[in-house]
Image (cartoon, rainbow, N blue to C red):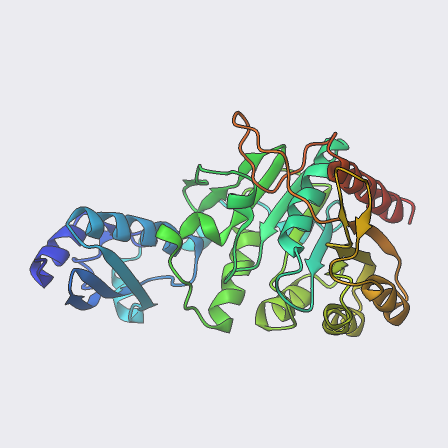
Length: 353
């Protein structure tokens, strides 16, 4: 069975990314609990809540699991200021940094994809809109801002992780879309237990510490509802445009109206509405069945004074063994064509302004 001494010994080669000193040397290991090979560790680091913390988290989890732990839980706190001052070398101001994505508002259009409730296919819409815009020749990025319910990497069939060079993170590119997600930095689908302020800081890092190429469009897959993350995005991106996803069901549309009302109160432009799971079309007869009812999109359109830009049927992409992407529709697929038309509508709305 693992002991606390073995855990400490395992952490000796791992350094605080901002101070470049061993966690053990910094006396950063504040607590170790072991129960039935389940290990819980509290670490104090110089800059919690940053992209470097996520990289450090991966290193610690991998090292402790290699030592024999079945599961590893981590909590972070800030090192004491006097310890940081004692060990800090080059100041952060002297480190070379790239341009924040937030400073590119004149050449990047931010599109927040949101919904009132979960389970309406918002992430599927985000992923397929991003890939469709890229197929139209646009330079596109996507931030999986649904930090508790991240799913974009799996939906796009992404298995690699972003590269971290110095203080900068390089997004993963798939289908010509640059992708960043909390899912890249979490081991074994572990639950995220951060509170609102730290989530906001993480989002800020996705904008400021990721080395994005020049982008025409950045898609933000927001968590459902009007919670902390959505509020942070609204405050960070005053010029963002919003695409609201609902189903035909009246309740889904009613709840989605809250997200639309929030957009209007924060002076964000509502691009339009996507009615997802609008119907099921039989391959045998071509007959449409309205599984979730009808009218939700139209009701929301009337309430928010915004157009329904697409009605997307229930379906699933054709699985391709060579290009694995469980949720991305091929351009020639009937639903893929609907997404291409949606991309056309959005490009026209934005570029004709």
